[in-house]
Image (tube, rainbow, N blue to C red; front, top):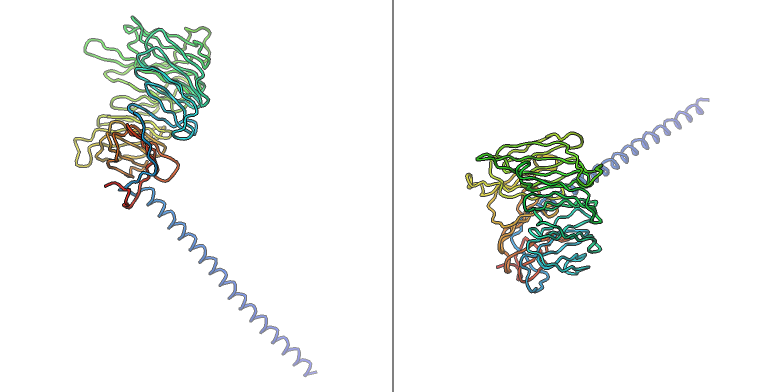
Length: 414
C-alpha cells in the first residue's frame, strides 16, 4: 500500500515538475515573441520616421543646380502663355490658341488675330477674349465650341464651369454687363450708367452660373467710391431681368479683382485688404483680411490665394513678403525674401516667379526650392511636370525640360 502511494506521489511530483518546466518554457517563448514583436514595431516606426524625415528634407531642401534633359529650338515664344487644362496644357498668344495633351504636341490649334488676348478657365471650359476688341471664343478639350462678335469693346470677361459667360463691354455713352449661355444666347443684359452706378471695373460669375458680382468705381470731386453689387439671374424671365441680391459701398477703396471660391463665397481683392462674402442668402461680409503693407501682386491657385507685399521698409529681412491664405481666409504661409519678378504664378503646390532669365521657386511652406538664373533668352513660362522637381521652361527662343539637382555635374549651370 505504501509502495503504491509512493508511486503515485512520485508521479504527481514528476508531472508537476514537467508542467512547471513547460509553463516556464512557454513564458520564455512568449516573452521572446513579444520582444521580437516590439522590436519589429520599433524598427518599423524608426524606418517610417526616417523615411518621412528624408521625404521632408527632399521636399523642403534648396537645390543649387539644374540640368536640361531636353532642349528644342523654337521660332519665337515672345508673349506666349501656358495654362494647365484637362490633364494637359493650353497655349495661347496673339496669333492663336491650342490644346496640348502632351507638352509640345497639339491636339488642336485655332489661329486668331487678337491685340490683347485674355484667357480664363473653369474646367471643362476655356474662354479666350480680345480685350479692347470685339471677339470672344469658348473652347473645351475637343476644340472651339462657340464664338461671339460683340457690338462694343471687351473690358473684362469670365466663364463658369457650366459654360456661361459674363462680359463687360465699354459702350459709347454707357457700359454693358452681359451674360451668354454655352450656346451663345444672350441670357441677361444690363446697361450701366457711369453717372448712376459708376464704371464697372470687373466682374465674376459663380461656377454654377447663377450668381454675378460686379465691382463699380465712381469719382465724385476729390472722393472716390467702390460699389460691390451681387446679382442672381437664375430665375430671370426676360433678358433685362437680373435680381439684385445686395451690395456694399466703400469710400476711397478700389476693388480691381473678384473671384468665386465656391458657388456661395466671393473673394474681393482690394488695394489694402481682401474681403470674403457669403451670398448663399442675403450677401454678408464674413471675413476681412487687412494688410499693412502695399499689395504688389495677387496670384490664385486651386487651394490658396497668394500675395506679394512690399516689404521695402524692412528690407533687411527681404524686399518682399509672400503670403498664402486658404480660400476660407486662414493664413497658410508668411515669409520674406528678396525676389525679382515680372510675373508670379501658383503652379500646383509651388509658387513660381520669373524675370528675364531669373526664377524663384517656392513651396507652400515658404521654403525656397530654387533661386537663380537659367541659361536661355528670357523666360516666358515655367510649368512643373510629373517628375520630382522637373519643369518645362519656355524661353523666347527655345523650350527645355529642366530638372533641379542638389549637386553639380558637367551639364549643370556654371
